[in-house]
Length: 119
Image 1 (cartoon, rainbow, N blue to C red):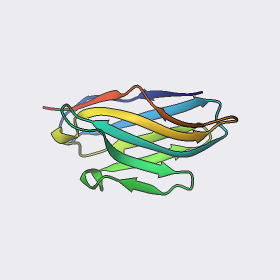
Image 2 (cartoon, one colour):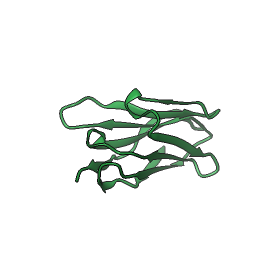
Image 3 (cartoon, rainbow, N blue to C red):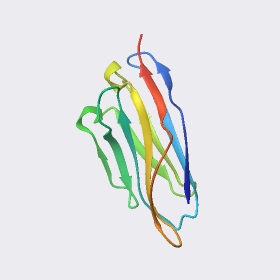
């Protein structure tokens, strides 16, 4: 099993910054990819940013230039630095980890953390 613990959400004013963290633990041999998704009320869940095992990253067009994704392989942790936040960034943000364990492969989701951008 793989467990994910997310942190860092909250309320921020437009133009502000937040950093989300997601730490993975459990029966992990290799983490293949880590990413952040978000879901706003009435909308489908969408990819915000992803990072692979070799450090390759990809971002939604709406966050390019404002968000950065990094990972600490020693801690099995992924971070999402969000700058210049806009009200349309308001959503529940979910961490996703794809990993290989000793007996299985995992596609695990975090519990979600609320990000609200409002004045």
